[in-house]
Image (tube, rainbow, N blue to C red; front, side, top):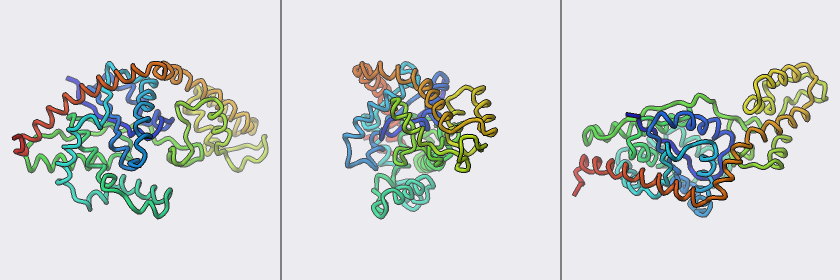
Length: 334
């Protein structure tokens, strides 16, 4: 039998190239190999968007269309909405007794996100909600609710998965062997940099190319991308390894083209404007089939509804079985 894999995304905005290369491309490649559950984590999105529920609800459908457009098959993947699986919330409550506040505060991923909030929002970032701090507990409930044996992660997400494994071990030591301790499937792709050279691509940083971006938006973003600052004149030689335009050429352009681009850049026979315009064309070609497929789902919203309803029903069946075993182990199966 296939192993069960559980992964998901918070619906806070459309997918960008960082999502695609860092996760989506891998999900598409492995969807035949696992019993695949893909969670649209709207409850977790509310941990830092609690005051904007309309945004989260809208993006549940936006992100689902993005995922379908990149090639995830609803016949092979169970797409489901987190808030429609009440068993996850119950497990979150049970697990909250098994982890201390101090342990949550030490979680490197949580600490990093808190630091980012402070950087973006200043003093307002000092105040975090109970729900935000407890995000790793909720994620442990997500994984174990569907008996996830494998979880695809980037290296920055490993601390969250380790916290899930700790919770599983604690539960099993107290209540008996009930839960499966998940293993990680580490992404082969390093984190994708932003157009500004930042190590992270993200909406809040304004440095991302989204899968839904139109030609005008793509052009504006790429024309503003960071290049080698030492290249002053068009025929000055430059270092392509520190140029974000060449970085993106390597992501979306043909390999033989990239060899030529690299050589011409070092020789000084390639201007930055020319290089950016070539990247714009390569980016448009790369995104075209994704955007064409997405257009179908935009024109058939009832199909998106059907996919989410079917996947959520399948996920709930699995969640009911898991919660029954958990309650039996905890002696609360009245």
